[in-house]
Length: 213
Image (cartoon, rainbow, N blue to C red; front, top):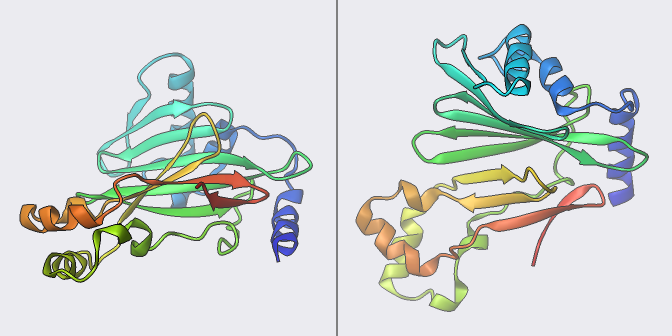
């Protein structure tokens, strides 16, 4: 199965196998994926960033978009005051790459989506690239699960909000369970003893993200 997935990824990336950097990919991203910024405005943000200036422009939603970080293979953009995107080039084989895109909305608690694309922005099947963690990954099983507080805590965690973060310096992906921050003070107090406080970290290996242990 893993060889099949890598073959599919290779097929999608073969057309644009020449080396592309994040700034080129950001300019070429389909407009409907970043509706706040037209292509020319994305170019302007890159020029401002490369000139060492504050890379902020008014966007189509009459707010501000700011390019915060950019390297050859990583980009972090605040699309609005309450949303962001991260882009990361992830290596496959034979000098090909795919794009990982993390979109985060703060409403008010951070919640993210992770998607994968070829370098010509064709969406890739992600079920074999990354399996999103569920609530059970963040439960401290050693705290016991029979007490009334545990039952109350689990009842309050009825939605699964997750903030994903890419790493500028390596190919790790971090998953931070943010649902507890959505709770009222009393529910949060009851939930904390039953939660694992550290985020999960996934490493990019052989064409997929795998949890680090």
